[in-house]
Length: 313
Length: 123
Image (cartoon, chains in turn yellow, red):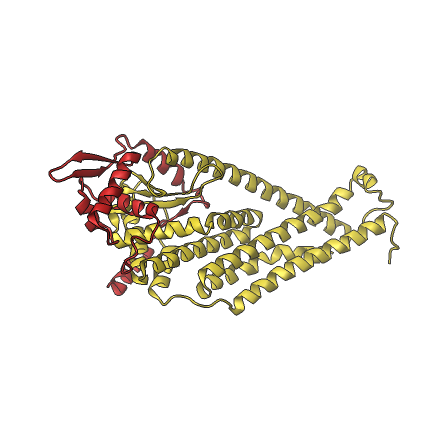
């Protein structure tokens, strides 16, 4: 029972390398969908397994046992082991809950502030220009009452040529049209639930950027121009940051997503829809689902034994 | 941009392009200047109409020039909006995942790699 419920907690570590390969090999929109679905499924599996693992500890307390009408103690394996794992599950679930609550709160507060700032600016066709020499651009998803916005600083517009500016606008429009923020949200939630899924969230974000880059390239009709736009924007942002020199943003050695995006745009358009790596991801998710379900069924049987409803074997 | 589809696109997108071109320039622009700074092939009168519409919306300012109006981007004189936006978005330890930024921070190695890529693929 315990082993079956531990498998879904270990499988997320298998997803991160699969997700990386997927972003490299499959069309970005498909990669975005599959990785997001996989990470969400695994996060649900993690939470479900942790939830089921709480039971042995909860039922060790007499009042809870009485409430569940247990007539003898629940035996789901060696007692110290079961109770130990159960206690760890409590800790893990608590940590995940705190991370979700804290992360959601800070994200909501930030979105609210940014929205208020942006909606105070005049817009033209969904574009708001922020008078700021630091190059920056992002897509701000709207809500039920507020429309979507593209926010670009004057610093960014000045760093790009006419066609590159169009590529930037097309990139941001693609994010908004495809509702990429929902994918990012799901991936982020999953990342809060399990440490291995935190790195998967970066792959989801990369797939979203790649999908928007491809849309921009299709719009300009030239992949090289889109690559130039991404690369020059990143270089301009970097040099502005270096000039400000308030802090070092990224450690020197780690390679970020931007060169990989430019490299992908300079290569021919990705066309593959299916790859073995997708099947591997499906397998991982199925395994997680099956083992958490089987573990829950086994525990349910143990509870029935403890309730005296099923014969102990 | 080789596709001459300026008229097929929604008017909002053209407005956005015009605003972007105007804000990229560092001095007031006439309709003809803006027309030259956007990749879409539009008639000068179309650009003038778009600029007038942006002015009505309060998105750009204008002043009378020698031939027609000169348009300019509105400045955020105190930079307050920019400051607050910057503070919200650039917290290293707590970055937003929902707001998809066009480009995130580059490391020194990334910078070198990017320069190499852009020079190699520069056309």
